[in-house]
Length: 639
Image (cartoon, rainbow, N blue to C red; front, side, top):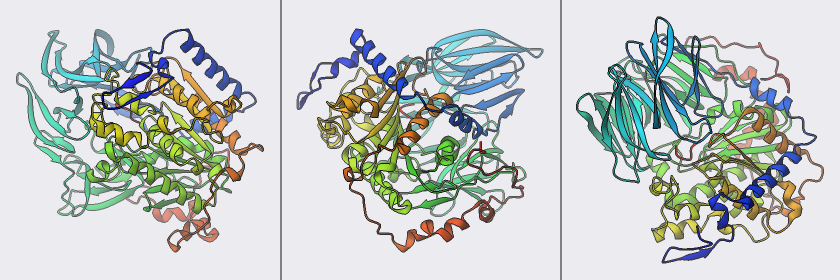
């Protein structure tokens, strides 16, 4: 794009616009320089112990389905499907009812978010590849004897539904979108039905696949949850008074309600729903196996609930004290076992997506072992509450989410008696936009930022319709052709509010990837230069690594271990930032929060005391099998 961007009603200059082409010797030299600077900063750091601690916390439960063993990825949407000699890494896969054909949506090997559908035939226990379909979406599903998949006309745009019959090798177009602001998702229902969701981030439509008919449209609303061909719920209505429905199953006899980041699982096999378990995290399931619920609760290692008998798979409590606050924003705080040395706060707040607090300990385990407290804050715009909560932080209201995060961070700092200079905010993708905007508007709030693939150059992005997500996300972030969107966004957009001399006190660790199609790497490069300012002496405090071939979900155990090692060294560095650079708030704790701070109550929030809060549904919780030592514990711009 041009250095001067003229929208007709407003124009502004950006001297770094040349980076947006991501081509040429200057671009290559810039990436090389940043990567060399990042790599040199790793010298002398002990990475392997942190990586070991990360891997030891990855306690997943594989799923067995029709002879396949399926394992989830720790940091990305990838799944690994294993069947005898086959190992298929994909975003989604399915098997037909006769167990003759297997299909998987496989990501481009270069890391780009482009997919092919790989189709295999199973004969006499042997599996062989029979077809590959290019230019597809990330989801597949068999309906009767046909494979339903999405066709992609351009990057990140899934605008057609097709049916392929592997027996006859015929391919049929069922439906195509016309509105460039809408996208398609493909899903399965528990009765074997296959349906599509048309979504523009405000309104959704649901339609069911009908053989020889195409798509039979059923309903439209701001939120839709589908159970089966004859049961779907619009706008989060629930049979339980004053509750927000998240999901349900007639076959499994359960439903899930949520309230500000906390979920409740209900048994619906009786006349009145019975509350079975409260989860500080997520209740996940697959429509093909609805009696098996996968629970991620930040108080326990991941576990399984079997709703046929309402039993648990022996969840073990984490050894870390945990506190939950509702005000000023729903927040979950995990304490280390010893003194608190630093604070990491994570947040997301976009697309109506849940904040995923359940994996907090799993993902940040090495920091907890090293004296960090770790928190997750739910802000308006997320999918942690109702539709009004989502809309309260969306598009023109994003400043509300920024201020909510600021208020929550200040209260967490007070509760821990931790100074801003020892506070780090983490965000990836759209969450990166949230935390960077907060750090830019309120620089005295924190001492460090850790961001991955951050969506940060928001004004230039919503004004560039050539980018893959600009049209699609009009109702989430706005569009450059709308002056109201531009004027509202410029009031908080980080690129336009970063001072000319940068933010010298701020320590930054940033990651991106050259194959990222959701947030192009030029965005974070431009931002790192802005926040670094004109003072080249701050280069070692503003670290950026641009990987190659990993895409939008570039995080791995090694890269995360490197980043955590950098953050921990920053926290313990003797030449840290002086308190005089921060407006440290004085303690003004209300009675409401004193329980989290008192030594007596902190002592009571131990593993021994936690047994009173454990899930109790006939399962047995394992205790004492691990030592609680400091080393002994193991699309769209989405998470």
